Amino acid sequence: MDRTKKVKRILVTGGAGFLGSHLCKKLLTEGHEVLCVDNFFTGRRQNIHSLLDNKNFELLRHDITFPLYVEVDEIYNLACPASPVHYQFDPVQTTKTSVVGAINMLGLAKRLKIKILQASTSEVYGDPSIHPQTESYWGNVNPIGPRACYDEGKRCAETLFFDYHRQNNVEIKVVRIFNTYGPHMQLNDGRVVSNFIMQALRNDSITIFGDGSQTRSFCYVEDMIDGLHKMMESDKDLTGPVNIGNPTEFTMLELAEKIIKITGSKSQIAFMELPQDDPKQRKPDITIAKKNLGWTPNIDLELGLTRSIEYFEKLIFDKTVKNNSSKINYERV
Ligand code: NAD
Ligand code: UDP
Ligand code: UDP
Image (cartoon, helix red, strand yellow):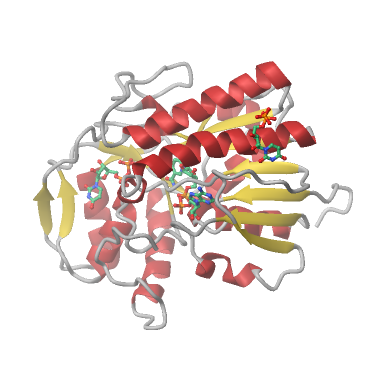
């Protein structure tokens, strides 16, 4: 650790989830104290198992839709299920987490006069009519569809962040995260990368929704965490929103083919019905992140998938791991 840096006590909401657990680890490695707050809806103790013995790590089971009175120096607000299967399981709770949760965390930041980073999402662009997506694009979201609990919840959270900033001078950092993948994703959370890897490793059919021509741009978790951290450390004036994601775009068919090739799987492709309001294309314009944060992703899809497949392979055959079936988990975990 660099001794010239001030040691901070940092709150990470959603810290037991996929991104949150990697972020907690990075902050601890830098010598900070971390307070991880999670209600374990989609997070798992296993993700933070290696951190539990660290004297600088504290875990609090708490739902951020309820007020939280703690003393910290900065906040990363990541709490919210991110997989469509999970956020649609209890849509009202998803909206509450995004909106009421944001109010509570902003209230906390306001009282303590500290900065707060919001994990927003490319979903604020909905099914985008401009390509690639720049931060100035206002989006194309169906406000009453099955994805709205998440998309509109996150849009309202952005509104709250900017109003607390204008009205109460809260220092805010809003990051729009594009599809991210890697170790600590739940094996059966229904997202495309985890689904395809699980199916390929088990030689099950790879389920492509629609004709597979829809695109996404996948960012490896290590790059994403670096981007979130750079944003938190950036100039006071940089409120965002800033896109963070890997701009290399793939169709879902190309993704399936890549995963089949890397795993050497015998899986066949099975085409299934496309879910309602599924965005046709998604690719971040990362000019602002490059210019203002000096951030670009370094890990390409081939390398990121290879690392992810190694992680999934280990878990899938580990009989001690709960929920390691390839069946998508529609229940609360
Ligand atoms: P995740 O589901 O793995 O993690 C979310 C965490 O939040 C879980 O640990 C869950 O238990 C916790 N949580 C949910 N509701 C809560 C509540 N009310 N109170 C306290 N904790 C709660 O998802 P992730 O992929 O790690 O996503 C983290 C954040 O990043 C989310 O806000 C998500 O919207 C955002 N994001 C992620 C992606 C991605 O591709 N992974 C893309 C865009 C945005
Ligand atoms: N809040 C919290 N922790 C704090 C301060 C506030 O959880 O340390 C919550 C509290 O529930 C409040 C919300 O944040 O309702 C918004 O706070 P704010 O000060 O903006 O509004 P007010 O208290 O006036 O409703
Ligand atoms: N998808 C797919 N097969 C699956 C899971 C997802 O073809 O088994 C598609 C899905 O329809 C979408 C893309 O992959 O077009 C990304 O889905 P994901 O749920 O990972 O994220 P999001 O839609 O939120 O970007």
